[in-house]
Length: 516
Image 1 (cartoon, rainbow, N blue to C red):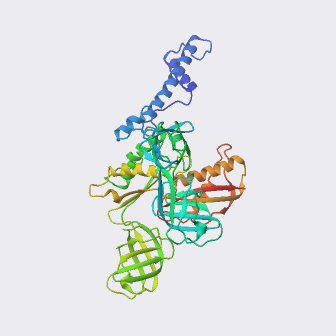
Image 2: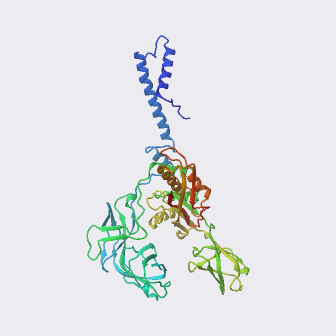
Image 3: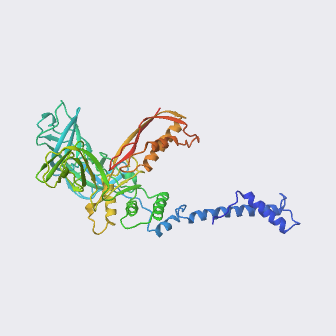
């Protein structure tokens, strides 16, 4: 039962005065200059203070309103502790003379933060195979057959392309993915053919921050300076595409309460969605978790051609399929019904081609309007997560994915392979908003609208789920300007329109917001 707290101290004083006048009729506690009124006023104020303390204590003892002192006790009951600040880690790319060594425990700095190498590495001349070079205007995009471990500061020599315009020595590159980078070319060559290679001289150095906290995280290409020079090694290193991440501040009391309240409100069965979510959130910085079980549909795509050689069917899709080897796939729509298989285990050859085993010997090529629908294989779980409170990008880095993967592997069933317990970073789909005729069109209202949209995308979007038009329009319409108390009375939304399509493995994120 909640404590009934008087509205103000005068109410307490009046109640005490009434009691005194009833118990001692000859007294007059209402005389302002009388000693009795002075005593009752002081006593009433202290009683009112006691009511306030009692109310505060009541709130401190409840799990949802616990403070810094009592929240840890509630968390401990449900096996939760407040997450401490963490260090960041990742890889930096060193350049210099081949054969030069960066020793373990080498200290480097970035701004006010200090980092230490956790292993030694030797700068070496390296050559990796290139699977493709495509061109758009003057920009060539290179895809390598393995992770290149480069930063944009590393010059790369491209050789072996039949189109000589692509063959450059010490080209300045811009890293765009773990296995991709771009550089400038002259002329208008067709996409590269030939046996193409990329050569460079560098070393990948694993580093960990000395300090703790989110301010130790570094993005792609951020510079790190050697504290002491090393012969043959450039003084400046740069962060690779995986970024230096995982550094978090100590968990706030509100975030800690939200986590243990989630445990209270969502009872856990072993390796259920709730347990996966609960465990992943033990990693500092994780805000939302999206587990997907076996047989969850990944996507459906139209087929351009379907041919057969022996028992092997070869499928060419009309667009990149984003399937993976081992996915279960249903084929439908072929007039030659032997091609219409259920739960075929596919082998992916490229972004447009995959194979499966077909029974009997149907006519080749297949005809009809053929589509492939693939789903997560039996025995596999795929978990995506977000870090919505991180500055910059809320999409997890490779290092942050590895941290959550390690946590979830501790609770996987004994008969589940670690390879089947997949933890992934979703692909962010930025959605730009253009708003006109906003009423009221004040600077503070514009800020409030953008903040409300950001909150919507941080809390209401889901991996693999389309974003309903009514919901994102409501996020604008229901905006309240906290500075003035005004609400949005009208607006025109030029972009986007309709439901926002989101494929499996993707999540809608807020892009730019233009309000005029």
